[in-house]
Image 1 (cartoon, one colour):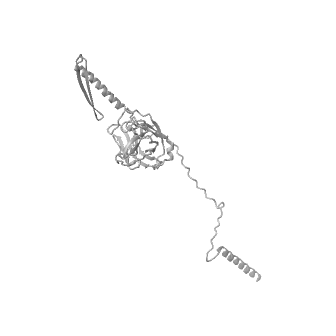
Image 2 (cartoon, one colour):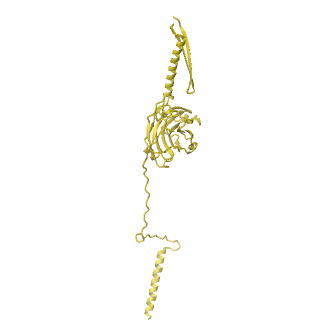
Image 3 (cartoon, one colour):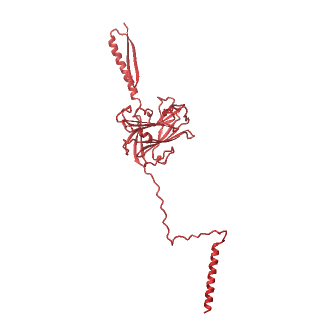
Length: 341
């Protein structure tokens, strides 16, 4: 029985990578021609290639995280990295999901909580990250994500197609991406939109506490809402947040809100969903009413003791003596005049 050796190769480009499939087979059948063998191997290579595309394109699963974002009156929140009482109206959300595919040594002792509010102009975020090994050394200024930092995605276009990749070129994209370092020295802002408003960068407000002294980093961030957004109750938008853990200037772990949130930098469906909620009732103190002035009859008579003068002594007594003397003198002259008549 004869043997026929067939070699077959496929070269393809996917996501910027050159993929090469090389198949070598030895056929042990007299009735199989080289042409038939090539066809069989071609089908096999196509199946392998399609399987690879399927595994890489499906990748991250769509997030099912949903949160309601309460509305607060404009301008009430002060950005100072202190948790304002207004954040008590927001539900506490957890940062606990870790991506072990990209960060297999991701520290399990890093986690966090966050609270979200909004008003007519801003989305407010307060974040408390627990990190027992805070490290700001060897940080590269341009790479905020490689520092102790947070990253936030606001996807107002809300395109939830599987593995949808946003970019500057896509028509309809309206996505804001903000990174803020824990020491407050670096904030980066990207807006993916065909008519991006670069002026929004200057409107970002933030404050941080780099290290509370007991293994916490505190962030407070006011993110401007683009003017294209209809700020109204019930509006849904994509939202995701990551907290990056760094050592010696390199990111070694990430915790996120959604299970696949670390993929938010290029896919939109991995982000959770935020919904603009109803306005909260904020109690304002009643103005103090001034007491009405009393009438002359009701007003108490105040007496003021005049301190004695070093030169004149007690002036009140002196005036009384003079007054008494004057009355006696008048009485004397009146009596003398009457007796002379």
